Length: 113
Length: 351
Image 1 (cartoon, rainbow over the protein chains, first blue to last red):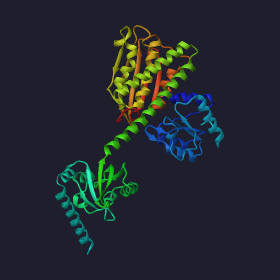
Image 2 (tube, each protein chain N blue to C red; image 1 turned 90 degrees about the vertical axis):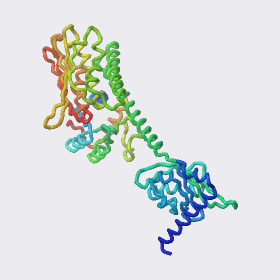
Image 3 (cartoon, each protein chain N blue to C red; image 1 turned 30 degrees about the horizontal axis):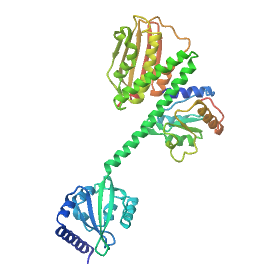
Image 4 (tube, rainbow over the protein chains, first blue to last red; image 1 turned 90 degrees about the horizontal axis):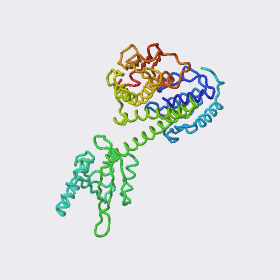
């Protein structure tokens, strides 16, 4: 919980105007289908389930994303080796670097959701 | 000869060979028959290494009857349930028996999965020709299962440690953001880490199976009740509902924030104030909800804070996001009321 709040603060520092949080696969898929996002961070392990269905949806909707994991880089499944990985705990500096990278890759112009 | 007649003939030959064994070797045969280690003799003079002797332990290990096994190729028996890799390993063991037998993964007759260490030894006659193979198998299924469980536990442990470190980092970052005063920063970090640690204590006591809500509330308030006879100034009412580890950690932090605030500004900052915490599970059209109320009374008159601090952010936003709930902090003149509504499936075990 506090980790999420810290991420929200970091995003706020970077000028983010809107943050949506999804706690499980279904909610995330619903959000992705109904909204436009500039980027996403995805926990590999979401409440006990692996979140690769969400990764697929993000890929299909061309939303740049990074994995967040407590399992280290080897925790990320094959086929997603090209995605940036934030290994918890990560510093603000690491976070900013990854987010800047994702925004640079992004296809959409920044939108407030 | 027909196939069946040929098979019957082979079986008779196999049984006769076993009979011959028994007569020649006496006590060794009894040992081989009664030992709990699975043992098999195969005929090396036949291409497919048919089984000519199988002890009871082998039948128990594989789940087959003796007449299903005798005269069958050893490969065939295990091939009925073994993977291609296992079969290749078995054949390699026959071709070149070494010290380390392969560990094979196979299925018993009833389909259950097993692991066994296979040792293959050639039996030579006086001329040094290999006439038979002696095989022994050690069931390693339990060991393999224990190894897998251990690996999973270690993985889970690493994951939890990382999460805890990330939480502590957030605590530190927040404390530094919210105050310039080193003393205030230190206190903020210490008390929050202590609260986190207490929640871990509670979880650890029950092997991370979950905790009881009543236990959690009591424990979150424990550091605040010892001094000045505060015990009577609490009222906790509700069943000891089982909470998930996630809800335990989140609510533990939230209760700590509420209690800290009560001591600094609220019902515990004067002599007369009291706090009542009570909860129920309610069934609503959209499902079951855990409804908890934290009500402060008779503290100093409440004034609306000019700036919402980290504590209220944790309660109103952090907790709401974490448990998909609806949280409200009302600054009523007679005392703070915090209403926590969380969908039971998010927080309650078997909710």
